Length: 276
Ligand SMILES: C[S@@+](CC[C@H](N)C(=O)[O-])C[C@H]1O[C@@H](n2cnc3c(N)ncnc32)[C@H](O)[C@@H]1O
Image (cartoon, rainbow, N blue to C red; front, side, top):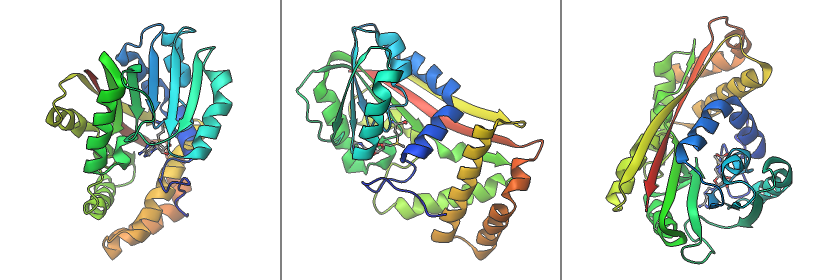
């Protein structure tokens, strides 16, 4: 399997993956949106919106008087966001823009809230500092910053040996170390990183997404996609030959794993909220 990337080079950000993943974890993701306390009439920046998966849930709270500005670096994702906007966002005004979250082309104090989900993980430490400065600038005084990030250090697909997955994640983390990327394991560190920038979070909450067999076909498709993704990573990262052979075996026999009556998968993410 070739790892798909967006036109801007980001893996796990293409339309098909975002759609599959959102529907897999929708219940917990929408609970995370509820944690933010979106208010009717709010003007919201969805920073790194992808295909706009959260707009339906956000618009339920901000209503017809609210508005969402969907900002993303990948033009093709913005095109999908535009397609979804009218059907998903229940009359909330959704505008979209291609652009960087660390250089937001919008005037100072324009938003009541910034929602950013699984985006900061793609930034370097420097990019993160720039994004936080921009968030401070475009939020009104007393505005809400809500960050959702994955913490893949808790990722499991049982019956796959959890330590085999951990070793792969560790190799991936070491591989991105020279670039100082935050990475998809950074969810728990966001609170500390904000505090280092002079922002005190008011809420931090981890959410487990746990699914057991029997699973519906779309959940099985998502887990199969994860297995294929890990197998591709195992071919590219500096891991032991024993581990690489294990991943090849897992990939070749993935249908046995997917039909295991005790199949269990766990993902974890953290939502961090601050009032600026
Ligand atoms: C994993 S996707 C998450 C999308 C969406 N927030 C969600 O949770 O479904 C990451 C998105 O961030 C965008 N992205 C990455 N770096 C960015 C940056 N510096 N500025 C704007 N968007 C960025 C990618 O193009 C991609 O659409």
